[in-house]
Amino acid sequence: MNNELIKRILSSLILIPIVLIAIIKGSIYFNIFLITCFFVILFEWHKVSKKNNFYYLGIIFLMFSFYTTYILYYINESYINFLFILVICVSTDIGGYTFGKLFKGPKLTNISPKKTYSGSIGGFALTILSTSLFFKISFFFPEDTKIFLSTYMSAILISFVSQIGDIIISYFKRLNKIKHTGNLIPGHGGLLDRVDGMIFAFPFYYIILKTNLIEFL
Image (cartoon, rainbow, N blue to C red; front, side, top):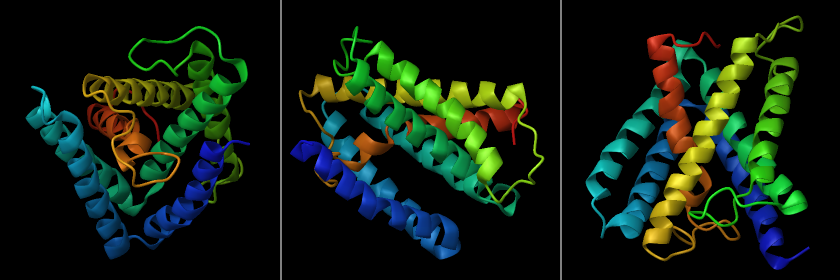
């Protein structure tokens, strides 16, 4: 096990409880957590993109992204929507990283050389599995809860958007010739490196809900 992987695991073990406490406690805890994340990511975006034409557009998008994240957390007085998007994005990342390392294969894009087709497929595969487990294990739903095809379709679409978001941020990092958006999280880089897919997935799902494109949760 290399040092980079050890750092990733240790960082995750520290971060996961913090995130879960903020989500479960809610109210002021979640608000402070979300605001802190917003300003950290805003600072990292400033470093990554201050020399390109998308700088102000990116700031506007981040504001919209965090607004939708806030709304999805409190919608129907339940954080079920927020938690589900989080599960999909994390599953996409883990599936992509694991399958990519195991199977390697052809590169997905030159923008992000480490991205492979096997990793992308792995992200979708783990998303489907996580979707099933989420509805079967979660205490939010009765034991006989049925999972509709539209739910899996939405999960796959959100996973796809998350992967696209990852590639978009990689593009801006490549433009500025940097590997990470920061060094806040050992083994992971900056906070934006870790949530690059999420900042696109949350607004996408928000639009799905508002337009009733797909009935989901």
